[in-house]
Length: 59
Figure 1 (cartoon, rainbow, N blue to C red):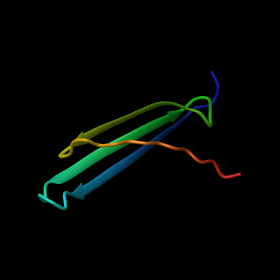
Figure 2: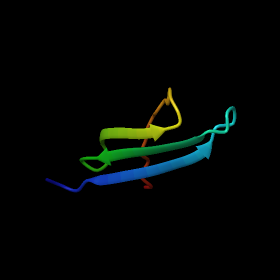
Figure 3: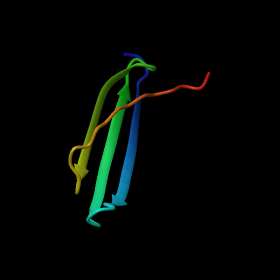
Figure 4: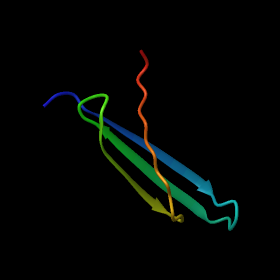
């Protein structure tokens, strides 16, 4: 196996419409590096989340 990278992004906010707290955790794995091979998210307080991941590496 070669190198892999795991990214985690946590989003916390209050809904602008109802004021309810929203927590979302996005995870993305690159393997091999530069290729997204798995992505996932968990959430509470929200629904209908549209996810789209892109990883840009500086040159």
